[in-house]
Length: 311
Image (cartoon, rainbow, N blue to C red; front, side, top):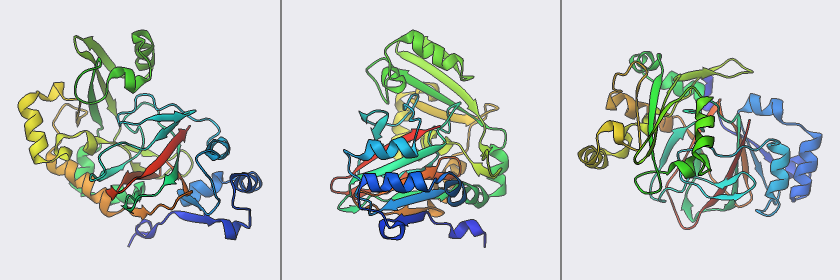
């Protein structure tokens, strides 16, 4: 059995750290115990029992994420609640969000993500995390080989009315010039049309960690594939729109369609290999966004998880 199969996030508890149950106590601990090397080694860290609140969260983030990034070109619905602090993906609670690395379809992605539990759900709602090496190893050889040449993502971002996110929400601006300037430096192809903008991006399917050199699964093709919507939803969208007009779609980089069974295997193997982080109010989880993918389990009741990212 692979060592990766037994991987779990590393927990740091207040009592073990012997610090006060406060954001100030955690900040003092982090200043005295830098966690950069530990994060690369453990891939994900959970801080529990430190008494962090939504009000004191920014102070902690200033230590753990010294250069917080805006969620520009993000494709999931979120609400900005602070200085580059966002709600986690706002999909209906009955849905499970499959495993993914944040912004892996983009030309540049965050190296770290920090999640904070402001309010734990009544039931469910865990954030599953998966070792990217193990996810890649779990795929059939045929699937890995098919993805080796990379994938091409296509977005159709509307101008304020339509399916999916608008280009204004996606790029956090209503300035077309700013969007064009951003995209020009990303290797993407784009064109404005009567409904908004279409963006196409060809990206690798795998990447290597800049420190460890580990090769990991690193793309979101299963989430962009119509098969991930379920048979009925995908069929209904196919009746309404051709593939090149869907809010988002994906093909292999050579233009060939990705078989539905490949996309579903990627999705399902990622979930099968994942380990759940069950939330308690005040918990924080810091992950290496290259080494670890994440998702969300379905839940009942209220759930408020905030997220921020850094390079």
